[in-house]
Image (cartoon, rainbow, N blue to C red; front, side, top):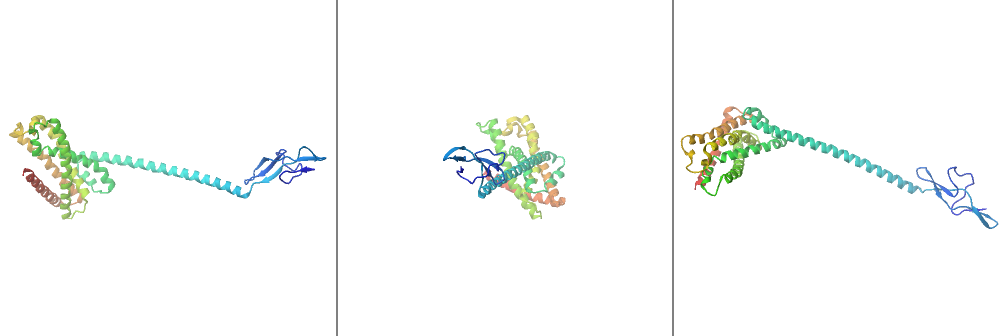
Length: 314
């Protein structure tokens, strides 16, 4: 006679060969069998137990637990797939950003080269300004800004304010250089926006359909000869006359000094010629129409300059 402690007994020998005595075979949801220790069977002989004996007892895991295990496995797999997909998307996005930045830097370098090319082949450079998209305008914005700053320094050195700056004994050559750099940038960008707006209005009156931004960029690239004067004209003139250029009664105030001073306006005239070529190329106008547009804009700008000079003198 046997006493079973927890489950119904199976006949000896009916259990699997892999199972040992005193254990149970548990069927998991996936069909696997696991040996689970079970309370031993005790044989009763004459009212006394003779020791452990008996077959293993088979138990089954509830179906709800199996469903939970499958759900956890499914969620883990889905998270792995989602993570892998996100990593691939980030890699593609990063590669696209790197390619875009590299292309942008290449376009910016090309526009710096075109700033030099405009002196030799202006039509091809101004033809590139027809593209007024945000990407194209952004690529040439730094180049236009650099041209405007350099041209502003060259122009501010030719003003009457600069010609008397060293009359103040507290100002030396170092302060003059700093003043020229800062005042030149301010002067250049003021003219860049004011004259650019005047040019834009003048061209609109004649039927032009370009934007204010493109009008400014045409003006900036046309000002390359004035920027060139900063590295060609002014070093020679300062080397000849020294700091007398910026002091009243200096050696540059008579004879060849006056002729040298007027030589600066040759660069200004060169810039006006490039501006006419630029307007004609960008808008596809005739020479007469382009000249009328630039002349109208230049007349308004000259009137504003005279008004400012009068106010400054007062």
